[in-house]
Amino acid sequence: MEARTRRLTLAMIVVTLLWTGLWSAQARSGFPAIQNEQTVWDGVYSRAQAERGRVLFDAECSRCHGVMDFVGDDYMATWEGQTLRDFYLYVSSGMPPDQHEPIEDFLAYAELVAYLLQANALPPGQTDLTANLDRLDRIRIEGMN
Image (cartoon, rainbow, N blue to C red; front, side, top):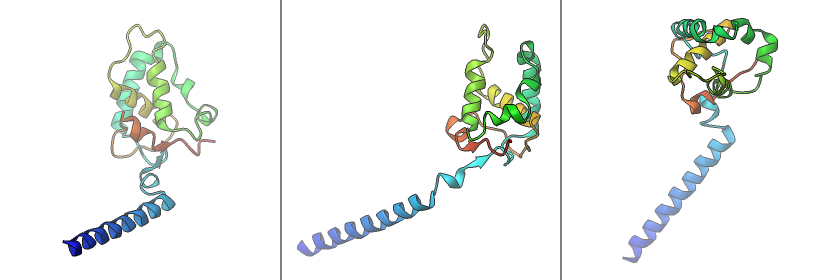
């Protein structure tokens, strides 16, 4: 029984050392957080999604805004270094400002954000932009100025 306990203890020590070494290596390399990070230049929305966002913008947002309110180097520079989560929350929590008939579909706000990215000449990709806040938090707004 004593030999078995020693082997078990030794195995636990080895596993702990291996786990600690792997965790330390991941922390130093930034893995996995940096591995999944993107920027707005990485094609984070699709053309079809931006078109749906344009239709929604024309129907809902154009009552108070022109698309040019959200376009241009100066406007986008105010978002430099932030994430699409920040931008998404700005759009989804404050629009429409009267909140008489808020847009209830969270994906609709992702479509609006996609349209605004397209309006700022950011490249589309093959997949739709998500409405998942954790994933949006890994997409940085950069290189806008």
